[in-house]
Image (tube, rainbow, N blue to C red; front, side, top):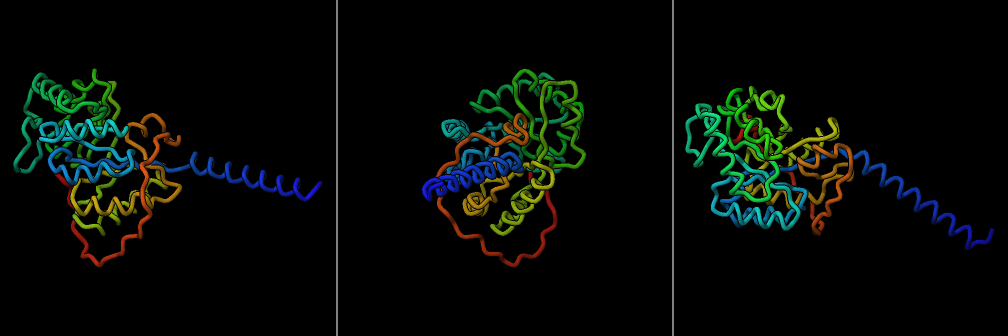
Length: 278
């Protein structure tokens, strides 16, 4: 065997090894879905979120002034869109227009959900905005799942209360339910988002998949722009809908080009009391 033949054989063997290694890593990658809630009010921050890879999904408030515009733009990017449906909390606080309440009839709930779907084009899923009172009421959530049954939507339970009945309410109905595991920005600092994203990565490695929810706060936007491009190679960024149908299979969505960035420097923070966002 000549020197040239030996060199060619070595290069071919190395290429096959690298290719098989990449396939193995991709096939065994843990899946991470990031959903950014409260879209439609802060146009500047929303647009910064839309600069992130298209695997980062968005949840749009149906009565927000820029909701339809953001949905159109996200759809052109191939980004997954959810309706961030306002639902009544236990605590008394200002509510979005057309908030779902446990006292509403099935017909009233259905009417508001259908109106929300009409206002947010290209949506494929729904999650709850606030909703501790609504999601903990089994009958009310059964009305929600019945309304969604004909839409093909999935429901992402934001889990704003431990006693949520969303999964139970979907039993016997064609609505698939996912659950949020991590909130990225209960405390609005870059350090907190970094900490929670690291937690999400650890959970994804342990469980195989994880869903994290954040909001278009300036600190969250800054942190995600720094951290998302640095996700480890064994973590695959996917949408919640992709997670439902392609568990353990690599996504074919091409990421947007990103510039390399430096890691976020750790800052000393006082531990915050756990608090579930509204």
